[in-house]
Image (tube, rainbow, N blue to C red; front, side):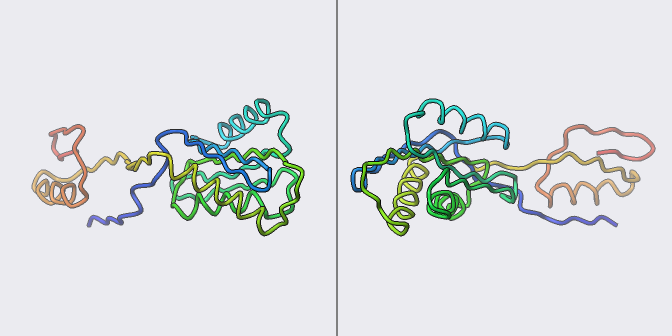
Length: 178
């Protein structure tokens, strides 16, 4: 007997880097949305931005990783708890993206925004950067080896067609190996 379970077989990510800006009560927010392959790359990109924008008050970020988008991180970088990283993360998740990093650089303009408007500013500029990016739908693939008696080759072929799979190599022996 053959058993087949169709799992989520695609995910959505960014094809390119997107940038957006927002000014709110003299504070400047610069957002950068990046495709990233893993946590190491995400941390490297964040470090590059912290170095490039060394004079900024805050460099906040969030990322989502994994084919199933199960790995997340949000960082407020000194902003009041939950006002930067979580709103940025929410924008990534609401667009159902993975392998995605958004960094928001804030230059303080001398006027405190308050936690509500501050969270809205981070959320807005992060969303704008993401919306400017072209998206990419990735298809997850796996390789399987199926062995069947020659008499059952048609059953194996039907299974392969129904799974929308393709044959990479076929071997004819006493049993048919696909």
